[in-house]
Image (tube, rainbow, N blue to C red; front, side, top):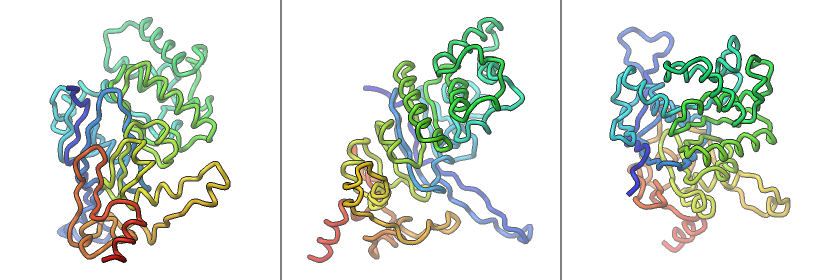
Length: 337
């Protein structure tokens, strides 16, 4: 039986928000950024995480590596709960879990050369390596991600956005991690460059045996790279399934609405497809709706949805909905009732 590389259980992130003008004794507001997310990630697997802006995708990723405080559990393959570790204890696991950020240029130190940027994790986690060994590893990694070794002494501003993201990927992979968390790594790039970076990540994953958590807005990109996909809404999990099942037979109304908005490259099919528009705006995480957090925008919401928060059903295709399935079937059932 394969042991999960990472098992997240009931992870929650809550921020204390103080409003301007509040008195010192005024109780701060609670912003529920992530509300009880659970999942397992197997070695070598890619888990895609999708959802609207503000749904908690990036916060969830940062919570796993203790960049933001969180409650719950994030159990590593050796049985250690990462969320229970001190900063010093967590240092041992930093080289196993690396991150690639959304803005490639902003994530690089402009005062450091490319060689220094890529070498920094090595000097931190493997201080016993000689300068020559570090330089050899840096040049080998640059070659692996498609950068020329003679660019080692250049600075980030001398590179394009796609090249800067390759530098960020090289920096993350130089310490040979087991898990790579990609936080919208291609959203700031041109479409043609996006494809190059995605193909590079998939190639490196196969070569290095990496597991990945891939966060994105673009559902087409997530479908291409992910083994399983988790859909978040207002910090809660709406649906989890294999990429094939989720895209061919989505069960949650939110997932169906997201997929209906994905452009189809066939003009005839694009005109013929049925859009499922989402009514209203995303509710504030400061005052989430009672029961199911999606009910205020859901086309099949009933009284039960306001009173009872649905839980994910067990199995390979998990859905947190009282009335899962195609929208047409739900409407037909309501008419018959």
